Length: 324
Image (cartoon, rainbow, N blue to C red; front, side, top):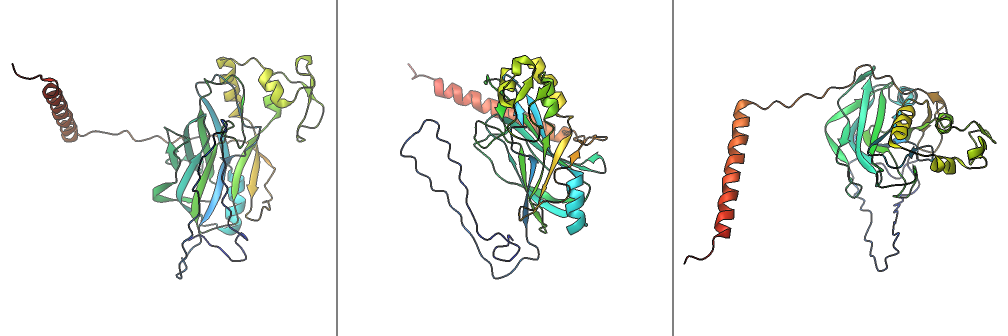
């Protein structure tokens, strides 16, 4: 169950609704709401929610005109090592996952690594539709242990866009997140990452900025073509091609990341703000091929043949005119 009302719980329950009405259509009716079901029988464990993936910020960006662009958000081994090691060395049990992106999202995968070896995908949606998002309840619960890695891998398409797509709250911005439902609850609500920004700037030719890069917003000092422009303006001014976008994608996936590792009360684990490298995938998971037995293949072929005959017969009968 989800605990409500104890000292370790939030003080209130909040339903947050994002309304997106760019055409200012009037008369729309919303019937959103919450239904809370109480039980007198306490569950053995309290469940929790962990947000994993890419920290929502302008450091997450996607060039225009790309048929495919991949972003990765890391729930790092450093964060899981500290949080799970302190509170649950035996690990937590994940039983459901919600994958989340916005309108440019095309596919999302939640990857799980243990001791450098990739496990079976925790969750995936290779036909992602922003208008249909739901929790995927796992057929088998998955144990996440201290030192594991979780990667939220998001695939996007921006072929219909002429400007950069930025990480943000609007549906026209993007996100790359996974929400894990698990038990027993520990003091960890966010396990995410931010890609290093300086190498993104260097990719488009920025040489110097006026302020330290960790202050925001910062203004570019040189070269002349970007002088006094913001990071966003410079990235939009850059002449993106598909080949440049592909090279940029390859760069971003290898960049060091800033670790975000937050507690329930908005406090931070000590690893927060540290720099980590994306894991080197030594043994990627190989999906088992689906082998069709001769009997099942025969059944499939027979079924398709019968279906085809029925379709032709029905079409013929339907197109037959009156007898003369």
